[in-house]
Image (cartoon, rainbow, N blue to C red):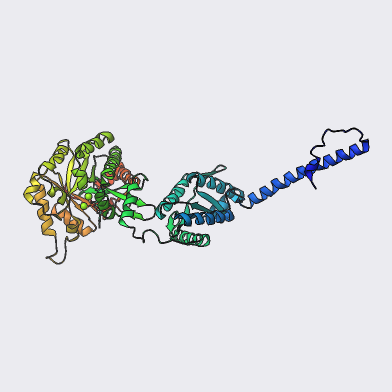
Length: 512
Ligand code: C2E
Ligand code: MG
Ligand code: MG
């Protein structure tokens, strides 16, 4: 029927038309109007049906079909322009627990909130889809590389860290994410999804709440040096660097302080050891901002801990050659102390033997200035370089840290390998120069007992406590600072004074 044919008819009553004819015409007009309305409703319904077939019923996010279409389109474009495309598959860890707790309507509500949270963590051009249930897919177009994709994954995991509110309950969620990228891990949508799935399975197998990439866990991938450097460049901004604290004890078991040791938690590589990234940071000069951050972070932390501790604690911070050679190094240290409120006498800067040996007399001026304001200076890994003993006397140092290799060789059965004689001599020499001796890498009771006999002042090592994050160190400090602990520690033999988290105590002489 031609619906437009009646367009000129309304409100007309042409001359010569009888009433019947007129009524007929009105009826026709009415029918045309109704038909038009029906046609509009059908169009709207069709639109809604097609929308619904592209949306997930619970979260109203694009569904899997919709995602697959978008991914296929994105791959066509990426192929033409040489872009990298990433697919992330996210699955909530143990979501069944939420459904059991809240029932399915409650579980759906949490999924809706989760969808919103994830959406907010993504950029506008990214596609978030829900595959149904507690699985979500993310499409990232024009991503730089797999590391950048994993970083987005990390953001998504972080977005889950705030608990979800369902009615009066708070629900904690974690998720696992599998990542893969076009073109490296697959050329079509189907394969990419399958590979994201197998990466996800591995993330679950490894305990959940983590990201895995299809190619490998990034622990297994040896990233090119350049790539690692570029990751390190953004590590500070991305909050991937963290300070750990390893306790140091006097020989009588009292806590003497802590050495601050840097940790890099890369979203994919996991924990990158300092021996790998510190030299890289030095070569790229990134150690300057990173080292300054470490110093300020650790000083701030220790200033806070001084208020908990019954006696002053020493904070040992490692310093790298580049920092040392940087003109305003001592001013930078003084600023960190002033800003954080840490007493200069509570800071001990650790420099390696070879670093100090390489400096000319004038280059040592910053050390002298720092010593003048009370800052302590330690020679780290002592015994590995070739310090002339006379040279030591001229340095403004307060502490020698005996290298781990000497501690490991203590009480060796083969007298030719035993380090007892050297350690005794070093300790005697240090004491004659009024220096404190810290033994690092103490791992056994035998080593501790030998060090006590040899007159060492302080101990540091796995036997007494591993490097630990600030909150764990603080818990240990609080525990050790309770009156009860102090009473017990004073009144009983060492073995009975229990310290949490495998922290044994040292004993014997020495104070600093
Ligand atoms: P270091 O300053 O000599 O630190 C002592 C290292 O020995 C630490 O390794 C510590 O975890 C480890 N250690 C402690 N007790 C034991 C033990 O009983 N047995 C064994 N086998 N090892 C023990 P880590 O944390 O891997 O640091 C390695 C090196 O990286 C440090 O050696 C230091 O030279 C450098 N480093 C760490 N953090 C920083 C930092 O913030 N700045 C700078 N410039 N260098 C740092
Ligand atoms: Mg050190
Ligand atoms: Mg050392």
